[in-house]
Image 1 (tube, rainbow, N blue to C red):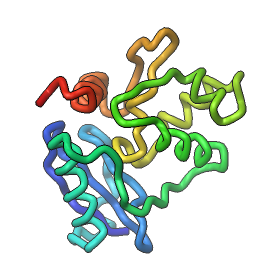
Image 2 (image 1 turned 45 degrees about the vertical axis):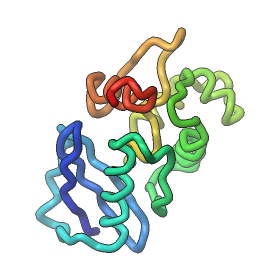
Image 3 (image 1 turned 120 degrees about the vertical axis):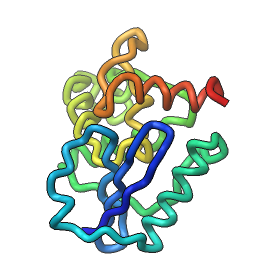
Image 4 (image 1 turned 90 degrees about the horizontal axis):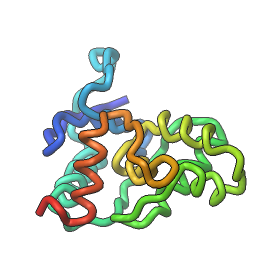
Length: 157
């Protein structure tokens, strides 16, 4: 595993890659204890990741083209693929996400898969809210979730 440190408007993000795919994007506050066991190196993929994140935070990138290889169960993978289909600037509920993947009674399981998303922002779990579009938990904290949603609605620029 190789990682890089990327300073963003929301704080330090740490993208990780393995075998040519992005495996993680750690948010500020994530416990990243194993960094000493990994190599810090700006590979072409991590450079592309930083460039695309720069464009996203500048409000000009609406989707990412980085090859993603998140590790998870088949159910988590299904949820994460569907997250990538939520249009930029839009939000849905956990219940709607569960319906979209064909498991309408699995909103709680969908929420757990969201919580375990290893590539936040790029796999846009911040676009999912609770019942009645109530802003609910986010791995990086609600302040970061609010920032990302406001960015996507052009309320920051």
